[in-house]
Image (tube, rainbow, N blue to C red; front, top):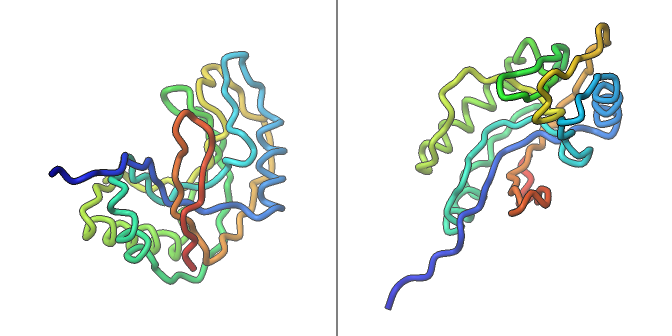
Length: 173
């Protein structure tokens, strides 16, 4: 008899914006000049990723739910740099990573590694993805930074198959 395995889950850890920040992000996105090819991020999916876990075996979900609770006080950051990254990814990013956010990112990295989940070794760059396939997009020439008061809550999120959106699996904090 063979063991049954559930299909992998595409997971990430995220900070969700407050309603006020969400509205400011939408206004900022609306000020860009988008080429016809740009795929704008749906409004309900705007977030800051803490860690992208990728495809994770469904059997790991209980361990992730239990092992990823890290207390942190929240913090304020400024989303102040509009960029077009390689691959045509348009983002609004924080220039500075506030120390409490850097500490949360590092603590979660340690927890993920202890659970056997690979983590990205690149420097952490908090950002909101505004669009993909946005080659040639132009950010607004001048804009005010979007202040983001991150609450002490963050979420374990599943990307639904077929690009159907996201499902919050658990909130921490």
